[in-house]
Image 1 (cartoon, rainbow, N blue to C red):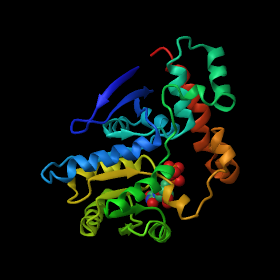
Image 2 (image 1 turned 45 degrees about the vertical axis):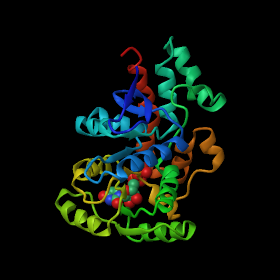
Image 3 (image 1 turned 120 degrees about the vertical axis):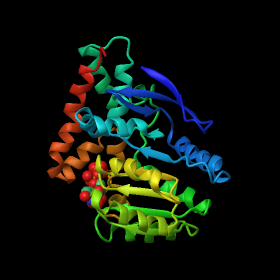
Amino acid sequence: MNKITSTATLTFTTIRTFIAGIGFDAIHENEAVLWVADFFQKNQNSPRIQKKFFLVTPNPEMVIAAQKNPVFKKVLNAADFAAADGVGILWASYFLNLRKRNFLTLLASLAAIVFAPQKIRKVIPERITGTDLFPKLLEFAATRKKKVFLLGAKEGIAEKVKKRFEQKFPDLEISGMFSGSPKISEEEGIREQIDSSQAELLFVAFGAPAQEMWIARNLSKFKTVKFAAGIGGAFDFHAGAISRAPKIFRQFGLEWLWRLISQPSRFPRIWNATFRFVKLVWRERYK
Ligand code: UDP
């Protein structure tokens, strides 16, 4: 189930684990930033190398969506780095690698999410959410004086994010923002805006799968952008537009429960991310 992969121009190597056909890189969050730094380091002196870095953060809901959307599946698997966004992904990687995968071990592994959280971190060691990774990558951009573009979210949200992080990291330059739309007809105009901002890092918040599909269609066409990531609701969280689950919920892998309490309209999405995902993984146990 596990296979070693390495990206052609990089020395960085990770274990890629597959869950229902979607690959995940088994690394820690601090290594994730080092990986991006390593990519920039290798490419900074070779302007002719058109290598780009595409980061995705698939969660259980995206794994389900990809089952019925082969293009989305292909896009996720073509990314340079796929971070495991969700405790459900850690759980699935643990359960699917157990020698005995029966109903009893399924229940025990699910109970381990809350009662023995270290156990489910044996294959993929850490959950890496776009929301947590985003400020760390902004800090990296600030220290290396690389410009950043924020695409997506509702009007005014990216401005709040810019204000907050340019205060926090005085060397940070968010050189462009646009709430935009993931419509194909608007792509060319958006690309022109991004090119003229001279950004090297691009963060896209159109929600999945629109943001990943958008990046896959456009990344190779940018003049200065070398790195792009789809980060879902991260702008909303950091702008304070929606509140993050309290630490205790996050620690026990219950962020989904908090979202259910605070945003009951998300029930169908949370149902997909929990019960339907467990069902999918159960069906995958002998594949
Ligand atoms: N979004 C957008 N344009 C769209 C659809 C969504 O800018 O056409 C934004 C939305 O405002 C939000 C972000 O995409 O800021 C992510 O939305 P969602 O809550 O669905 O993402 P999740 O965090 O659940 O992946």
